[in-house]
Length: 134
Image 1 (cartoon, rainbow, N blue to C red):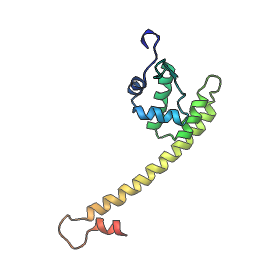
Image 2: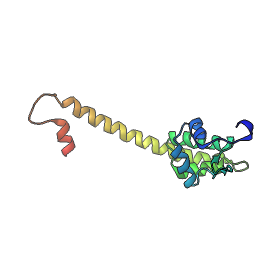
Image 3: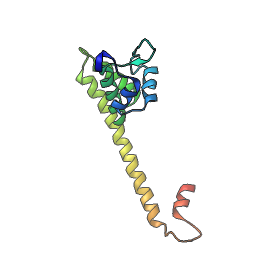
Image 4: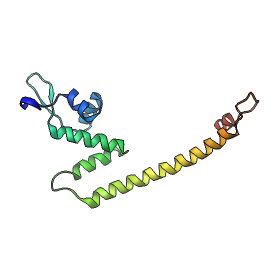
């Protein structure tokens, strides 16, 4: 923020590694606070808003849902941090991730077995097609 000016939406998005429309979306749903506006009506973001956007991006990368992110943001406010509450949110998410990993492992095994049975020739039946039609 050179010369007391805030970050533009483009600069904020670039710095946080998100799309410009993502910033607008997060503002619309209340994950990001509405920024101040310049005299010309352009959005002007603070460094704190940049840190918040980076927090949201990282939480999304880790697969947290928007409601969980909203709760984590609230818990991260000064005087609100509760490790027990944060741990509960993260533990529930971890359980979901582990369940998805188990599902993917079963899917991988089924698909690998089907692909292995396929000879790749011009046979009248194909194990991959048979599994997909079942």
